[in-house]
Image 1 (cartoon, rainbow, N blue to C red):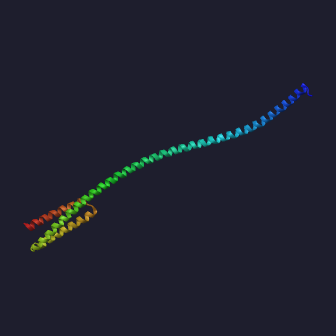
Image 2 (spheres, one colour):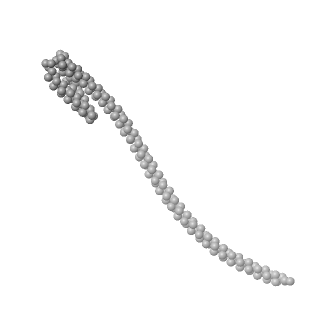
Length: 177
């Protein structure tokens, strides 16, 4: 049987073996933990770099957002100006249509008066040559008005029409006086 001393000695040996195993295990685990810790430090650094990149990308996106906002404002301004120009063109087109209709009506009235004068000229043979020359001049003026009407030269067309109406008035006075 074992004596107390032997038991103590065995316990001491076992304790020594346990302590040695614990130290050996702690050394092995410590190195592994240090290796793992070093790896996590490397991963943390990489995540830090990735975060910096994302922050830089966020700043770039913020700058792009500001640019797009500025472009949107400019496009809105262009849209407003185009709407304004479109309204102005529509108004001008309507005004031109009214003027053109009025001009066509005046030309129509002048032609009617010319046709009336031509019909009356048949009855007045003696003055026929004078009136023919006068009518030829008036017709020439009317053709000039029609040409200018195609070019939208309103002021010149209006002046010619007024001159034609005066000449027709004088002819009518001469014929019917």
